[in-house]
Image (tube, rainbow, N blue to C red; front, top):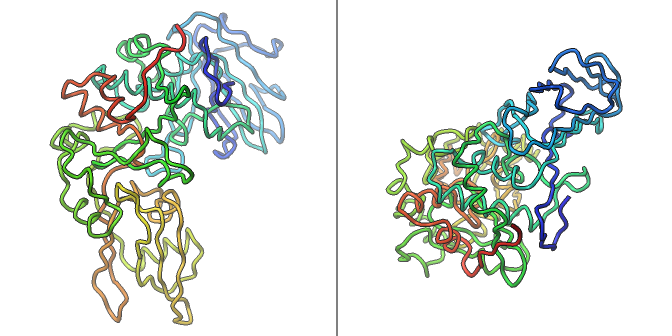
Length: 438
């Protein structure tokens, strides 16, 4: 596993969570190609076919009828041999988001299966560069220009090695396979271009003041990236500022933290690298990851009736509200993203009450049945009857938290001929591109 704050001099091996206890999954199927080349631990496990049906039985694994504490499958050291993979299905992709689905993944490296709290825990161990080859075309499609693939790979490598959050250390792995960390769907979408992108950038990271950069990224910033501290709190990070996603910095000095400026920005949809003037939205889906949905990423709207939003808040917040009176913006970051709102509502006794929501993540969680696209939105209260709105419309910008590299913006830059170093310099200003191992 990687160690926080260390700059490795050789390529590390990492551990990736594929099926997590939170998935509440109690069965999985493994298909192994060229089975004799694999080492199965324990070796006494009967090998009758390359298919293993695995179920959880109390605190044990039931593997093709055999009861085991754990199962370890070691892949031979054959490098990037796509004929020697472990197919695992079903695996959750888009965990907790509105695009969630179950997919089949083909994995390089070794696999460990155990039971944790009555559910499956599946961990994939492999060299970092093999992992990164798969991340590039899990996050975005192989149709993307090589400059995008390379910049995505360097950002993914830097984020992985910075290892700031260490979200899953208690479960014994470095990162999970999904949007919580970085998308990793094995070799499903792996192409020659993705392989070349990883090979061309091998060992390259972004540094700032002799430390590996915490290179956050999201799908679409909506034309203005957000600052680190707005989303996660704490001190400002110099290379993760509010930053105009355009050659034209006409809005550079205009903070979108005020309601007037945020409304003007969201409703005017000025040109940007991630905007439809650069990457038309009817062609965008061919560049996105395989689990992404087609849609409007730069500007969007979501509508709710009074009954729908009341039901949603009661479900997500247990408000026991009779009606929602108003959703009040309290605090915005420089990209217009809300990190604090106040919900005003009436209870069953017709008393007016309020609840504050104090993070960008929580705002997105409660304002959508699954997860809202971003928190950069304005609210239109409509069809008022005795101060009670009958309808609510959210007009929004971007998909994701908006900090660091904007994937659609980086795509737009690549399509316009920018190189990977230029793309990274745009999204992580002041950072230095450095090769730390060969």
